[in-house]
Length: 402
Image (cartoon, rainbow, N blue to C red; front, top):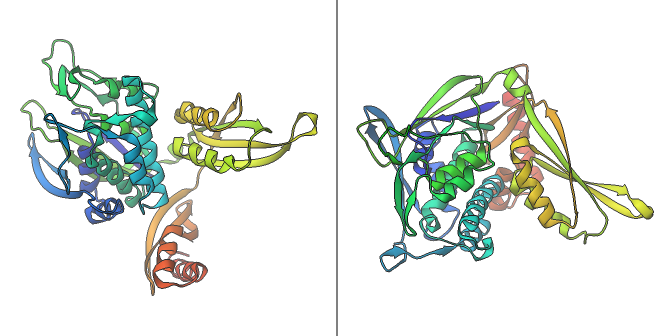
């Protein structure tokens, strides 16, 4: 299992995550291609090598194609719904779109709690520009490109002192960061009270990304790639760098996949709504969602809705289930899941390169399957039946790996 481990003493921000991932091998042009799926006026990523406290590191900047609208010297607030719609209406691959929407929704939920407004009425200030979208989509896409299946993180350094915002001067960590960290399982580290104020180290975008995608523990792993992502500042007292290790988890780590199954019985809901509920559960972090026909009291036919999810996403998935269905309660059962190794590879075919998913047992590939999104895109472009495209990919993959 390919895993990633983020750690560093200078906090985390969206551009630091992007820089670390690009420095570890994620191709910038592929990340840009994903961001271009937003359509007209999509931001541009720019990479440069910089020095941070004597360490060579990669800085990735987000260049906006049009200026941010401003009112009275500040950027104008932008409705959360507008950001969500831009991602939903994009041509992003399904996995990247789903994960990006999940992270955006977590930002929205945190900011809505801070400001005491419903999420559908929320407008974002600093987080409302397209560079937030670029940080999120770029990070999610980079993890996909690198074949990362599980993300881990060291405790988060939050900083100290105050920071200026469009809401005035706020204490560090700002309330939005506190809400994102709350309930995520993340451990935080503050400077000792005797130390001078260092400012904000953990930004809302960095907090949203790591508390959504990462498990906060140190994995047992072999390292074969390292990345260093630079922040914008270059203080004298420390390298302003986020470090990323990439490698393979050992067998013990793969076997220790603690999951839960969340279930409920429903017999009074419009069947048309189950599809939307499944999407909501997946966006909340469920790994798989399925429906089963059951017999309920008074001989009424019903539906058993089940979702398997990481234990640290329990609250989010339960909330989604209670909000999007008619159920009054759910059952939660701990389970342990063993997983085969999986990796993503690319095969060259007469139709062009196509990604395939490889299943590996005891170090040997035992099966391979074409990536549906790649086959779909080629089928649309060439007007070939998708089954034929998948057969071409399957033959090439079998010849290469099996």
